[in-house]
Structures are given as structure tokens and as C-alpha cells.
Length: 62
Image (cartoon, rainbow, N blue to C red; front, side, top):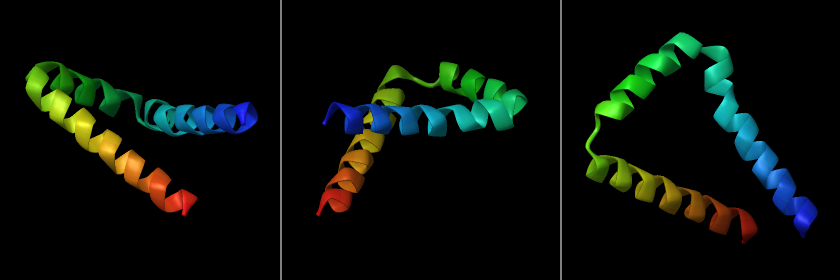
């Protein structure tokens, strides 16, 4: 099970790293916009992303 967990974490890191590698200048602009967002908006966005990820995991495990 730990091997599977490490594989999943590795895949997340790859997917998270692609935009920084492919478009670093655009990422700087997006990060600046994120810094301007209200904490409540970021929290809601994070919750939506977690729920979407949970749904994908649930569908993938069925």
C-alpha cells in the first residue's frame, strides 16, 4: 500500500509541476492574482477541489 501511496503522490507532483515548467511567466501572473484573492474565496476553491478529487478517487476505485 505504501508503494501505491508514493506513486499517487509522485503523480500529483508531476501534474502540479507541469504549469511551472511549461509556462513560468504565466504562473507568476496567476500567483499574483491568487495573492489578491480573499481568504474565504481561496478556502471555497480549495474545498471544491478537494471534493472534486474525492469524487474522482471514488469513481476510480469503483
